Structures are given as structure tokens and as C-alpha cells.
Image (tube, rainbow, N blue to C red; front, side, top):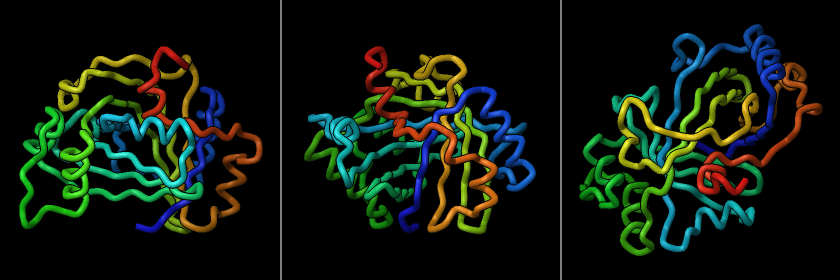
Length: 226
């Protein structure tokens, strides 16, 4: 996948519900959703020097993050991902991994590499061995997503964003976590390739909403200081 535009906005309960109502008429809902939402849980990594946190705080360009992601508290599908941000655009590299390998990462160990190991796994293996890359925080939230093939547009509303240091609970059905935003505050993300169709931009009132550089990972690492 090539680099994509990624816009983030902080929205209130009322704004979220209004925009979601509008998008239902224009876009189709993501197939992951059951009853309108699904839960995303991510386990983020950082190294001995907290380089990922520092890059985020300083707004370094380019910068990258490693994470493991599951959905709806299930280990049926576990993805190892690397997210790269460059010149205001993002790219995600993803690889499905086994529960066994996920448990190895959670414990700070490196799964054994094989001939079938992806470049992403080899890269993280090197980061762990040389720079001490290891899991540092868990982020969880409820997501409602809409998609549009034209422009490869994906619009997501993320509610009840929470963070946790309980790394060992990552694969459990529920994880003990604390809210990262004040009650009634949520995050809208708009992702697209080259051009955002005008009818979607108008429905979202992009020019009115408050643009944000909000990072779930950064807030989880700095909980209590924001």
C-alpha cells in the first residue's frame, strides 16, 4: 500500500452522531462491524531510549511505530503492524502472526525466524535484539468505520479511547484500562489516497471541524500528564 492522507479531528458526541448519520447515506459501513461498532486493541512497542515516544513528541518526519492489533477482544486474527508517517501522509505494513508469536512479543522475547518470516518480522527482530524494542502500552477503543472505493476513502469514529499498562492482559477478552480523553470527546479520522471526493468533504464539514494531531499511543504513554 502506498502513502495515504490521514486527517484527524476531535469531535463531540453531537458532532459524531450528526456526521455518522450523514455518512450512512453516502458510504457503506466496514464489514468488520457488528451492531454498528467493533473494538480495536493495539499493543505498542518502544525501545530503551523511548525513541518512538520522542519522535512523536517532537513531530519528527519521518517517524514510525510498531504495534500488534486484535479486534473485538479475540485472538482469531492477530496482526503485527508498522505505521510510517512521512510529510503528513501515512503508510501501514501489516503481517498476520500466530498467538504463540504474539505471546513471545508480549513477554519481551523474539519469535524464532523462519524461511517464511516477513521482512516486517525480521526488522522488528533486529530492533528487539539491538535497541531493546519491547511492548510498552495497550490502547483500546470502539470504532465505527465507513468506506468508499472512490478515492479509497475510509472514515472512522473512535469512541471510549482508553490506555493500559497491563501488557499481560492484551489477549484476554477484557483489559483494565483508563480513559484518555474527557467524557464526550472522540476522534474522527479521514484517510484517502490522492483526492477526497467533494460530497464526502461537504458531509464532514472539514473546514469547520478542529484539526488535531492526536496520537492514541502518545496519550497512553503520557496518561496523567495531559
